Length: 138
Image (cartoon, rainbow, N blue to C red; front, side, top):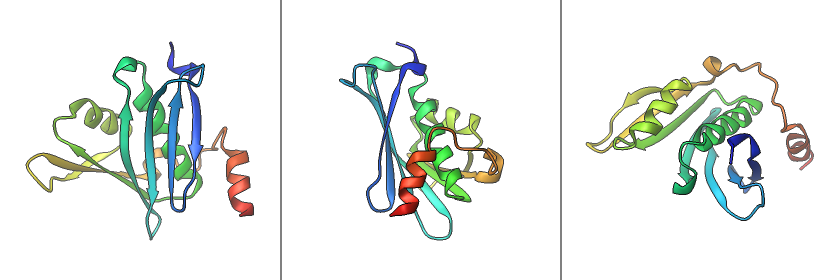
């Protein structure tokens, strides 16, 4: 299975959004991530999980990029993410996407931050227009 075959499901509770990647038959959740909105145009990436069977397909990259596009649509200025230091692959991926390591609050945990202007605040959010319109009507 290729990552371009992913189906993205977006669920929107009160002030967080969960992105879930499903296989092409909608049977197996391949991974998910949550984006929690905070005050002052800030958000947090949380709970990035990928099914072990789908390692190496770019699921995590796809989910993070979708979450960042959504944050961009809401004009979020900063997105942070706390990561265990043992998750070197995720830390490397976040850095590739523009995150910078800003602090280490413990021996096992580090925090990364993305200033959204580096991601391209004026990008057009493809694929989310209908969802954003529906949210605006609520």
